[in-house]
Amino acid sequence: MTRMQVVYSDDGLLHNPLNEITGGELQAYVESPKRLVSIKNFIDKQPEFQVVDPNDYSLGPILDVHRKDYIEFLQTIYHDWVTEGFPADACRVETFAHPSVVGKIDPEIVKKNAYLKATGRLGYYTCDLSVCFVKDTWRATYASAQIAISAAHRLTLAIENDGDRAIYALCRPPGHHSSHEMAAGYCFVNNAAVVTRFLQNYTLEDMNKAQKPYGFDLEAIRNRDFSVGTATDKKKILIVDIDYHHGNGTQDIFYDDPSVFYTSLHGSPDYPYFTGSAEETGRGEGVGFNLNVPLDPKTTTDEIYLDKLQGVLNNTNVVQFNADIVVVSMGLDTWHEDPIAGMKELKDIDTYKKMGSLIKTCQGSKNRPVLFVQEGGYTIEKLGDLAGSVLQGYLCT
Ligand code: OKP
Ligand code: ZN
Image 1 (cartoon, helix red, strand yellow):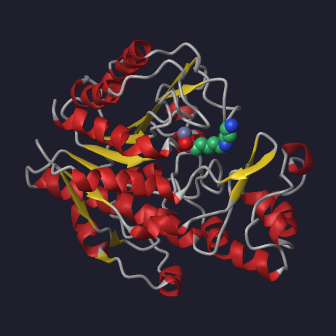
Image 2: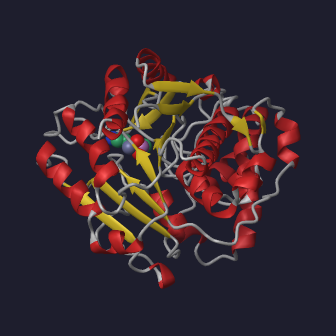
């Protein structure tokens, strides 16, 4: 295989908050549209990548993961915030629904109370101060999800026709911190989780039927809220999360589910602080289908990182799981220069090539179709190079 399709839309640029609160201080928003521009520019210059537009599969696949009230929140919160007289550039949480406040109260009452004010809903559905809404946040989020879904459809078609074995969904905003009814860590809709369910729930025929041109009438979309997936042979999906941060949202969504194996390598201790330890192995039927590898951000070298990645992909449980498809949550913030993350001793660009290569050849992912989904990564000028290296590493192996 020598080429790869890249699903991309300019709508990803529309989410452009002014700032966030990090380290207790107001700072420029790190998850900037420039990230997307950097990757896109790099991709455009490399002949092996073919950029394609997304299609539109409506809300159905998104609602197979996220609760309807949460998705309505994403669509309306900015408008309600501004209508209540709050400043346009500061639509974010200030009061959290901590368990000690709400834990003993009937959840329905808590929810009713939260809905009385925009700030209440922000506290109810969002988790930290990196989440900020602007006018077009929902539009960009919707596009990001449709990009991932379109990539899953194209990959399914290619598998059927003996075509490409891998595809890249150039998503923004990212998704892996977001859960059923929660936005966190720059994430609103969990793109990796949405494609996982889409691949499981939709037959190729369902996908073909659901596909519409990405055209876009936000009001019309609001009312097309049903899933049309009819698949009965649930595919087994392996999610490999190589973002620097633990994908707490993805872990949460699939924690009970033995049909989805979630594995993550991430810097620890670090954001999101409360999850990501090796003891988290799943719950109920999902026990044994969750594998966390926390890594020391100060001492993890290129060699150690690759060794740990190889260990994960060759892990007995992962190999035994015998996935049908691999979804890679491709964060690029392990790079040592990353302004908010980074493994301080991970400095060799070839490491990213080798990551792509391991994903192609290791037992857990060997010969399996791979859907690369873009997550984090904040060294703006370097991002194209980092993304391209993983993908070229995959292609050249
Ligand atoms: C999103 B993704 C670090 C502040 C952390 C949120 C980070 C979200 C990362 N000092 N704020 O996983 O790249
Ligand atoms: Zn990250």
